[in-house]
Amino acid sequence: MVIVHVSAECYPMAKAGGLGDVVGALPKYQKKTGSESMVVMPMYRTPFLEKNEWNIVFKGNAYLGNWFFDFTIIKEATGKLGYDLYLVDIHGLLDRPKIYGYADDNDRFIGFQIAVVNWLSSWEQKPGIVHCHDHQSGLIPFMMKYCYDYQSLQFVKTVLTIHNAQYHGSMGWEKSILIPKWDSWKHGLLEWNNSINSLATGIKCADKVTTVSETYMHQLKYQSAGLEPLFEYEQGKCTGILNGIDSEVWNPATDPMVAFHYDIKTYKAGKQKNKALLCEQYNLDIKKPLIIFIGRLVGEKAADILPGAIQHALDKTNCAANFLIIGTGETPIESALNYLVQLYPGNFNTWIGYDEKVGHQAYAGADFLLMPSRVEPCGLNQMYSLRYGTIPMVRDTGGLHDTVVDMGDPDGFGIRFLHATEEDIVHAIERAISVYQDKDQMQKMILHSMAIDHSWESVVAAYENIYQSIL
Ligand code: GLC
Image (cartoon, rainbow, N blue to C red):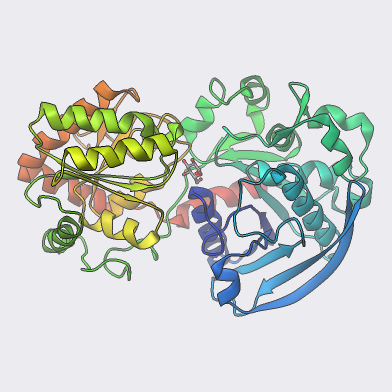
């Protein structure tokens, strides 16, 4: 069966967050079970594009409103990703370095989606499933069903996976002229709160809707930035499927981005050497528990309350823990963190930026990973950290709830707290400091963590069930 994933991100071509990781891995594991899974995404001008070989597979044209545009579809030539990766090139729209953040993002992604359905409708043998991801491909199920030019795709089944329901791709009705001529009786399907809402349209029109954890699926009914009644109404076709992680890429025994390799048997020496390297690089004290945060420095991840919480914890405990924060984001948060570097030299440091290698090395060398997220549909970092024997400290929400059991439980292996507040974070830090002294408990938790299997194999079966239920 041919499964076409449509996404704005796919690692290693272009990634802004977890969406890229998931779309970059899921098709690889689907292919291993015999499905013909592929990815189609925009052809941004990224280093991966420049460094790899491509073949042209299709040239087409279409209207975006009054603009008649040409587009080209190219395919990665070697198949080295483990699945076929197709890129859509539209000059003037997609040929830019960044994924998001342009004033005309709505037009860019509508143009992208038109090119995709245009291409798919030219296929003699239609795909089995078109699997869309987030709002940037949320209009595709509508276009396939109700745009006159793409009627040949009317009966092809569609799935929408929501990685983050905070972003809707909503736009004014003046944009409706950009969507290829559609059955105007269906305009209600495009509408939510007097706007065109790409995510809502995807939820209404896709045959199945999934999100990336069961708890988040449940939470969407009361916390989805305005879509709550829609999730309530459509719950019959909605399922939560926890993401997997690419356990070939994320393996401390082979990870080329980690200085000293280790596995569950050799973790003590391995992690210690990696920690020594980190502490030397970032001027930290190897004897103290090292707590890291990796991620976008934005409110959604509760990064705004991190500086205050860390300062409070350092003062309260007389600097009994060390911290390393890795990420980029909102300028005031970055400044507040940089200020802490001045205040607590030797106990606190940051790496303001985004770099895979820095991240991997930090997972390998740290003792704890802090994720106080206000919203976390699934969260991958806690799963990476488990695999690297780094104890997760997480807010009890979304996928974090589904993947981390608090150490208060007989089978617990992490630290969980209820609220994204300074008080709760400080309390979690104090618990981390005290469990760090208890070598037996630490060992038990690390061994438990490293043995947990979050690999894609079982996740692939869950998606397969979703597909089969609509085919
Ligand atoms: C988004 C979510 C994150 C999830 C990822 C992959 O980035 O914020 O929680 O893990 O998508 O599905």
